[in-house]
Length: 338
Image (cartoon, rainbow, N blue to C red; front, side, top):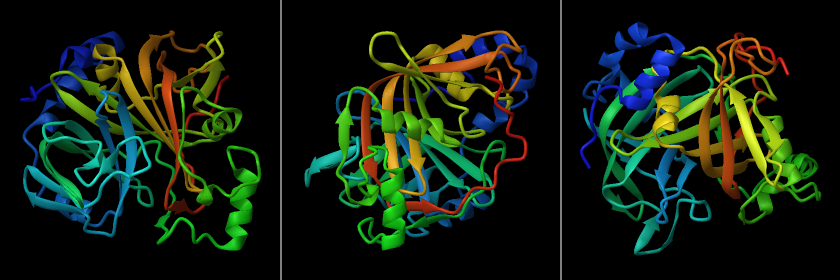
């Protein structure tokens, strides 16, 4: 599929509704042909963590972590990125065997974001899978650009050699914080799949200060982005039918509205929460919509009069090798207003 450049109809519609069309138009150069060499290449090569958004073989959108030693994101040229890692085999984009090393196919549209939480830097790479093998895949990039440090909580992320080699003291802490609430250390449990959230996973979301958001557009490709705020900025509510809905306020940003524009055009969405003290990853696949509330209503923490409402359809819980230090909150996090 050839990806069309420039802002699409969903992004333009949200920009107009927000009254920032002229400001956004000045940023169209960020959507020009990618240039992965130079500073972008050095930043990517130094990373040991990225987040990937893609569709599984059944067409569901998922967002998953990718981890590797520095250098696993290898820039080949201005428009090609080799990713020397695959999604975790027990996760929602895991493969089924040697002939299917990942829930990806050549030609799939993917979005990748590399984030250095310690210095609040991030870089997005969106494009097409052009090669796939037993140890990784290659992306032909259509877009590549950095984002500002807003709403990133500063933390030092470590990658454990083995998720089962958690020190006893940490395992005890993991057990107390286990989303299952049953005293089991999260580093030693198998993937859990469901169509709804349980109480422990609602709590994980309620205390989160960070998540990754995946969105897509039928002609403009797939995207992965970062969302952050004060703990509790993502709200969990009953949908009245025994399930749950999530919502979070949209904060002031760069006015491009890549994520909200995709949601306006195609409601497919995927969320990834990582509980850094335990390494638990919560993957949600479902549908989202942009809700215009008007500025100043309860929960309009950023004062924009916008929020995103998300309904999970599939839930996958896994254990990762990710751990992190206690965060230093972004100083501009809006206070919660209800």
